[in-house]
Image 1: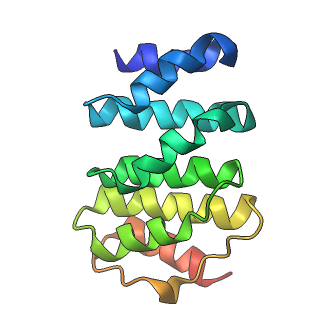
Image 2: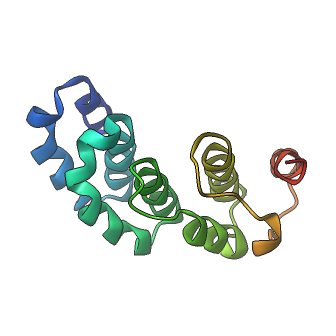
Length: 140
């Protein structure tokens, strides 16, 4: 099921958009997660799904929230930093924190207008991978 969602990226957006919209409203957090990743792959072609994706910024799953914020930033339809900072300040999961820091690095390094301020969040987890990401962000 998830591979089929990921494979939507291989279709023209005009053929995949209806199915992607369905996936973004799925009861499955993993389906929503992969749906937003597919949106990011389509970039501006998927702009028509921005409002549906914006609703995912308050998703119960932090990983979905991060991917939604990233997609909206890619298409310049939203500032990802509030979501990234919130997840980094509140998560108790190193995996979620690493995903959020990876998004922070991507946004900082590849998108204009969203400089990351590491003082804006309080990362409460101690993990070597998180430390390396923080070292990188702090060196900028």
